[in-house]
Image 1 (cartoon, rainbow, N blue to C red):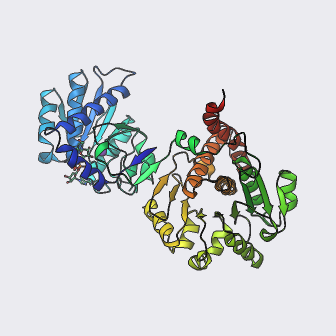
Image 2: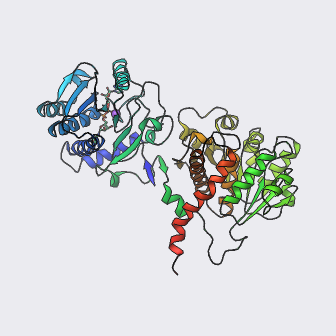
Image 3: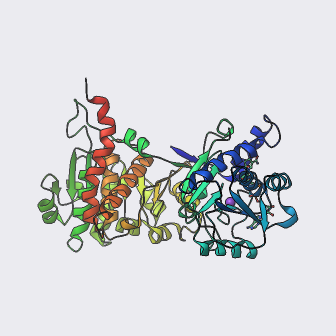
Length: 485
Ligand SMILES: NC(=O)C1=CN([C@@H]2O[C@H](COP(=O)(O)OP(=O)(O)OC[C@H]3O[C@@H](n4cnc5c(N)ncnc54)[C@H](O)[C@@H]3O)[C@@H](O)[C@H]2O)[C@@H](O)CC1
Ligand SMILES: [K+]
């Protein structure tokens, strides 16, 4: 699990750590790690005689960059620095850089083999001043790879918002811990590949991070797998109330998503029965939620419509004392009176909005701070919110926030959300806590989208097909433990 901490949390931890080490030691740890990674980026041509340009701002971020530049210069690189803050430049860093043979330049000019962005770090306000912005644009024209120091300058570190005036990096070398802007929002892709340099901060960070980003091992460890005593009921029974005469495809896709998950039994309730039966003979069909029999979780909403019948089905699913995942048309219905609709719920509820559905539920689109928006809706409605996006965010009613790292633009295709909600319901039925079910579904769904995209333009059916090998690889990690018994 990668964890990201906000600026105030990092600053407090740095203060505590700094009190235990000599002055300047942390900056030397940061600079040493930075120089090693920079040298790695120059490995193909070698550090010796390479041309490295430093963009240096006023604070300690510029200090890190100058000390790292000095280390590269001592290894024979030709390092120059463009000082964007004049006399406010980090004095000790500048002295070391000059002593190592570093040169000062007035403007960006190529050719350059590597650029270090040390304009601002966690002390920066979002956006760049005009001279810094002009330098960043000139760097982009050189085509040289960019290594961002701690964070890409100009982004909003705590929210992941990214004004146009912010850096696009190929690699970001970050110190002590990940920051929200490296994992969420429009800033995350600007960070490129993120590498963490340990400066000894971990023991001083608080227990609860701003964001958690599960990796493949976390998802694999959580994914339910059948054991010797499992049967189709104990693996979990999921009810799927989706689709209608007009939208039969939604039912086929959501039932397919549910069947790719860990539940052992899928009940379908709705008016796309013929299509579902033909596509998925193993699904057990009923006309309505009330006639479907017992389930351990419901998925309700996609393609359901918003008529009187749809309302009745949503009401019936929410009345069941089991986890419920509400998606698509279900969210539109819920938006009429979210608090009222959910008032009697005691089991977990998961809502899976995209931005426009979110706006209907919350009164406004999520805006630039997506984790905060998702947290606020989750707390207000006492639900788990899965806010879809390039980095899907999962927020719990008690304020925890998880981010999915596997998203891909290939998933922005009609019906892909139906596959996701079916899979999520299957994970709920198998007994995962709501936020784990939500993040695990998003993780596998993202990988399936990536897998599908390797074969060409992606349809929701391709995402569904991609899910099986993804689930196989996730569960084979666990299954290995059961091989020789
Ligand atoms: N505190 C520590 O012990 C450590 C700090 N480290 C580095 O220190 C950084 C934080 O340093 P600082 O607190 O000095 O702050 P920064 O270096 O992030 O920058 C703040 C300075 O930049 C200017 N500035 C703010 N917004 C700007 C903008 N949009 N455009 C141009 N200039 C702007 C401000 O005038 C301020 O002087 C971290 O990101 C990290 O790189 C590392 O060396 C690790 C150890
Ligand atoms: K930076």
